[in-house]
Length: 285
Image (cartoon, rainbow, N blue to C red):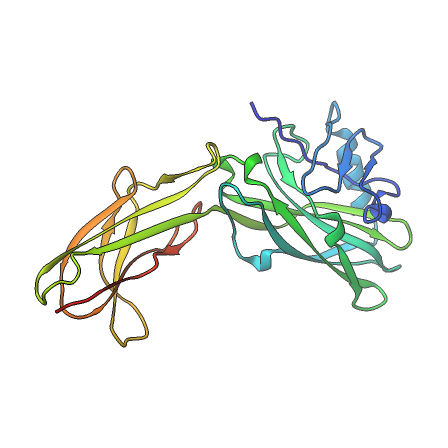
C-alpha cells in the first residue's frame, strides 16, 4: 500500500518564514516540507485541523485566486519530472508577506492516503499589487515515480499565505487542475511510392504513460482520426475515424489520390493528453 500524506495547516510563524527555511514543525504535529513533495505525520483526529481552519477563516486575509499551469492540464510522462508554474493572489489589511500553492488529491487533506506536491522553495517570488494585495509566483514539480494511474484526474489547488501582521491563512481547495497521462502516437503509410488509385495501408500505435509500471502501454478502444494534408496545403483534413485494438494498434486502408502527408490524431480523454503523430509523406506516382 502506498502511504500518502499532505500537510493540512500552517501554524505560528511558519507562514511568514516558510520561504526562508526548508522545514518547520506545526503545533498539531505535522511537518511542512518545502521540497517539491509534501510529507507529514497526521494527528490522531481532525480536531486540530478544524480549529486551524476555523482560526484562519476568522482572519482578514483572503486568497483571491490560485491558478496552476495557466489553467491547462498538467501532462506527465513516465520518467521526467514535470515542473509547472502557479500564480497566487492574496490580500490582507496589513499586506501579504508571502503566499504559495500546493496541489493534492484524496478524500480529505487529513486522510493519510491523501497525496500532494508542494512549491519549489527557491522558485517563490512575490510582488505587491498595492498596499493590501500581493501576487506570488512559483513552481511545483510532479514526480511520476511517486504517482499511480489513478492519479490521472482533477487535483485540488491549496494555498497558504502569511500576512504582515503575523496572521496566517491556509485554504485546502481554492481551485482545481487536471493531471493527465502523457500519450504518444505513430503513423506509417505504405507502400511507397504508390500508383495513383492504388490502396495504401496506414498503420500506427497509440500508447500512454503507465505510472504504475513506469512504461508506455497501448491505449485500447480509442477513436483516432486518420488525417491527410495534400502537398502544398496548410492544414490536415480528416478522412476517417479508426479505433485502436486491444494493444493500441491502428490499421486501415485508403486509396492513394495525390502526394501528401498522412497522420493519426487523437483528441485525448480526461485522463490522457491529446496527441498527433508526426506526419508520414507519401509519394504518389
